[in-house]
Image (cartoon, rainbow, N blue to C red; front, top):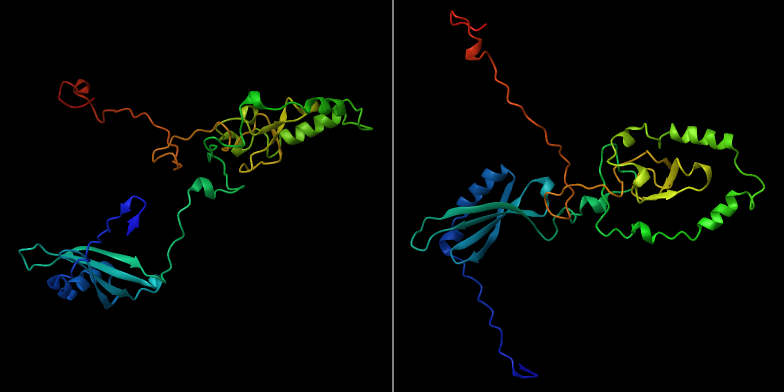
Length: 272
């Protein structure tokens, strides 16, 4: 082959390893190892394959109905100066038509709205595009909200009694501070980035949740409500940045002496 800068040396492929005959003849040894691992669910031999010099893998059909299309793979080997063949590894391997599990998807990508339960924690992803610094929050619509709240755009507005009735109902309801979800939450809605502000007289007490993965998404929540999907939820990771770990609270243990101490003995040698 000739390239732009002259002849290109050909890439020499390594020859396939030869099948060691002694290892290939150890069919009964390999099948016995497969039977030891899989019980009676081992079928007929399917052939041998050289893995490397003096290393051969025997394949056997599996008769287990739960593993249709799979095969038992038993790797055997020996040292160069010995005719003693030993088993190196036994495992089940999928074939071309085998039923296999789907690709693993991290829990953080599988969670759906409504999956969060009391006590669950759902921290936002790093650089979550739904969250921005507080100073970047646009306030351009506040003037329009104030204009409408004054009653200049509507014939009538909610009275103080009507607002108080709604506030009592919402505060004592499923999105107030007294629910199991709120009591076990790591933070309150008052300082959550997913809380949208209300306008008018109810603004000091309530907001609207805008977290699609929270159980209260799109609903009125009290400022002292909360859930595990709070924007500042932090979970200590122990297996890398992509794994969600369990939150464990350390406990203090105090050693207490069991039984009587020498100081508690009576003059006759018995414990008091």
